[in-house]
Amino acid sequence: MRILLTADPELPVPPLLYGGIERIVDLLVTKFQARGHSIGLVAHSESTSPATPIFPWQGKRSQNKLDTARNTMTLWSAVQQFQPDIVHSFSRIFYLLPLLGSRLPKVMSYQRDPSLRTAGWGVKLANGSLTFTGCSDYICRVGRNAGGTWHPIYNCVETDKYTFQPTVADDAPLVFLSRIERIKGAHTAIAIAQKTGRRLLIAGNYSTTGEAGQYWQEEILPHLGKNGIEYVGTVNDTQKNKLLGQAAAMIVPIEWNEPFGIVFAESLACGTPVISCPTGSLPEIVRQRIDGYLVTSIEEAISAVEKLPKIDRLNCRQRVEQHFSAEVIVDRYEKLYQKLINHQ
Image (cartoon, rainbow, N blue to C red; front, top):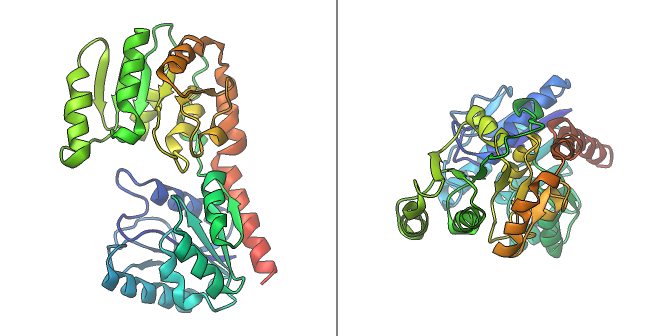
């Protein structure tokens, strides 16, 4: 197959630091090429992904109208030059506008709550040539309100990058790994650690300005360096593997509908159970009392921490291997492409 992938214009593929979608796109490029497919990529001009060719976006801002017009023409030109069998967009649906009326199969993937208005007009204009995927069934349930066909295909983990740790020390810490903002629940993780007497290692980036900066200054910073609560900074892939592997659990008690949250799968890949909340995609990732605990209060979370020894860490690892591994997810996309191409 000749597959043309697109990523948002703001970050290169793969990203230098953070950029979950860009990592997924780079992984798809690599895996599809290894399977003998020809892969083109429309992405940031500094992308180093092995796709051949790479078509650089002319605009760098997704929300800018002039850049949107430029990027729409960039994608149109890329299709004319590359002549793909299918286009798979991880960027903006508007960029597909000149292509929607053609019979060329198109896949639009959402990693966040879709705009029902734009998805809806996409369905109408595409006349059956546009298919949607969401990174969880939660996202697809939202998207189906706009019409069209939606397939849940999860984000994935390269399992060979994460070391399975079958056991941890009795005094192993809890770990919070995510952006440090209110909706991720770092303040709740601190409260739970304090009430259970467990050490808590906090990793992730934080803001020093605006509402998020105030949150860091008032609700996180005063607790650091006290009662076993430590901030360890941002972490790269190697550091993340070590941090998660030594943890009794990863505790990220979210306060929003998480679209997927790749870090939850990364934790399970290390054999480390997850303590979070039953919102968004979390019930699809974490099986209650098997891969961890989904809680609705601090009291339930305290009980979950006490019951962590009941979790078999091998079940956590196998959960990822069977449902969220790169090979499983690439298989699902490949089969979807073949189905769409055969039925055009």
